[in-house]
Length: 113
Image 1 (cartoon, one colour):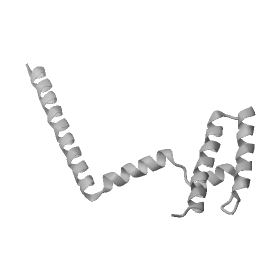
Image 2 (cartoon, one colour; image 1 turned 120 degrees about the horizontal axis):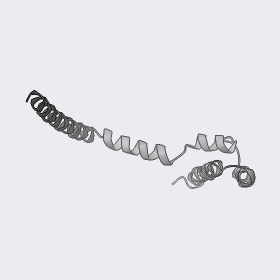
Image 3 (tube, helix red, strand yellow; image 1 turned 135 degrees about the vertical axis):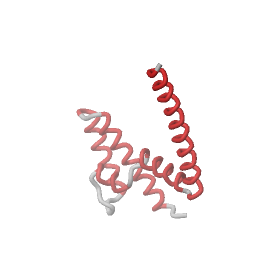
Image 4 (cartoon, one colour; image 1 turned 90 degrees about the vertical axis):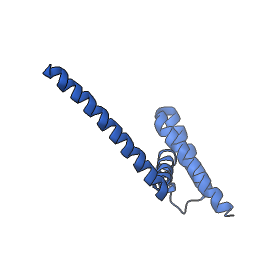
């Protein structure tokens, strides 16, 4: 009889705790959306997971900010070929993403409007 009572208390108590946590989570989301924190966090996550910075792209390709676009393309071709022959697919994809990132930066420089 005592075991059944204890089990019943545990089940009821855990149900109450789950509902309280769910309500607190909903309230935290509502507060975050009012202040704009949720949208900012989502944008940061999107930007952080998919986009690399131009500094990181330059580091991958081994170029500086003053390097011409032709030199960047030569460096890209060299690294891409080297990774095709004896490198890894991961490094090759990093090189491609770095070039794509710098292409967008270069387009902004060419057409500032």
